[in-house]
Length: 167
Ligand code: ZN
Image (tube, rainbow, N blue to C red; front, side):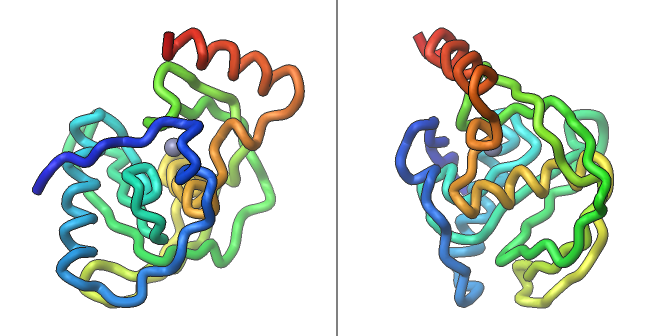
C-alpha cells in the first residue's frame, strides 16, 4: 500500500464527473487499499477517487475509527436509490478544502446500492453521519464540492477563508 496525494480545490479534476468502474481489477483493489490508507493518514472519515486524481466512481469511508473500532468500507459505482425527504443541516469538512467547514443540508437517511471489492452488489440504508458522509462522497463523483452547494455571500465568505487557510 502507499499513500496517494490528495488534490486540493480548485484542481480541475475535482470538478469532473467520474466514470463507472467496469471491472474489479488488481489495480482497483490497490486503489481502494491506498485510498483507505491515505484517508486514515489525513486523517479523515471519507475519501473519493477523484480526490486522489482517479476519475472513477469509487469512494471509501470509515465513520467510526476516530471514536473506536475501525469499519473500513469501499463503495464502487454507488447509487442512491431513495432519500428521505427530511434534510438536516450539519457542518462538513473536506480533505480537498483544508481548514474549511461549511454548513450543508443532507438527507437523514439514504437507501444505497453499490458494488463491493468482491464484485458483489449490496443494498443498504445509511443513517446519521454515515448518510451525510456517503452523500458528501457521492457529490465528489459528480464533480460537486461542498462549495458548489453554497450561494452568494456564504460562498464568498468561504472562498475568502480558504485563501486565508492556504496562505
Ligand atoms: Zn470532500
